[in-house]
Image (cartoon, rainbow, N blue to C red; front, side, top):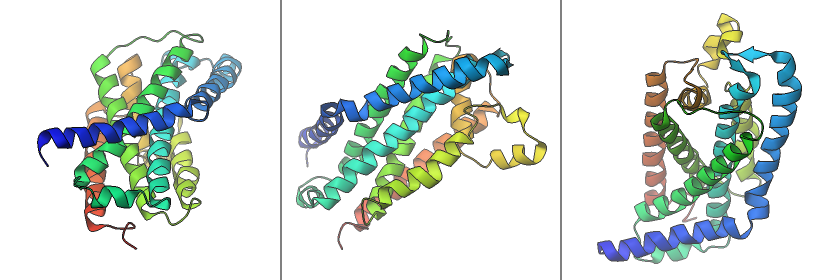
Length: 257
C-alpha cells in the first residue's frame, strides 16, 4: 500500500473506534466521571479530613493524580479489549485481515482508539477534580509522557487480552483479578513510605506504582520512587507489549482458529 492509502486505512479505523465509544458516551465516559466523583467525596473529603496531610500535601491533592491514572488505565484497557474481541466475535476482523492493510496499521488503529478514550477520560476526571481541590502542574512534560505511555501500554494490554480471549467472560478476568488489585495496591491512596520495609519491597514489584508516581511527580513534584527508573520501566513495558502484540497479529494467534 502507498502512504496515502495507508493513511486512509489508519484514519478510518481510528475514526471508527472513536465514534464507537462516543456514540455510547453514557456507558463509556459518564460512569468513570461519576465513579471518580464518589472517590473524591468519600476518600478525599470524608476520609481525607481525618487522614490529614500525606507527602506534604492535603490528602485530596495527594490521591487525585493516582485517581486520574486509575481512570486512564481502566478505560484504555476496556476500550480496546471490548472492541477487538467484538470484532473477533462478529468475525469482522477477518475483513481487515483479507484487506490490503498491514498488521501494524490494524494494531495502531485499535490502540490509538484506546489512547484517545483514555486521554478524554483523564481530561474529564481532571476537570472534575478542580471542583474538589487545587492542582498545580510542576512538570508538564512528565504529565504528558506518563499519561500517553500509560494509556498506550494498557491499550496494548487490552488488545493482547482480546487476542487470547475465547469468550466474553475471558475479557473480564484480567481487569477483575489483575488490574484492579494492582491498581489499588499501586500507591493511589497511600505513600509507599507508610509501609513496612518488607511490603515496600514487595510493592515495588508492581509496575503501576511507577506509573502513578511518575504522574504524581509531574503534577505535584513528589514521587516515592526514582523518577528515571519509573520512566525506564514504563518505556520498556510499552515497547515490549507493542512488539508482542504485533507478533501475535502477524502469527494470527487467536484469529485463525
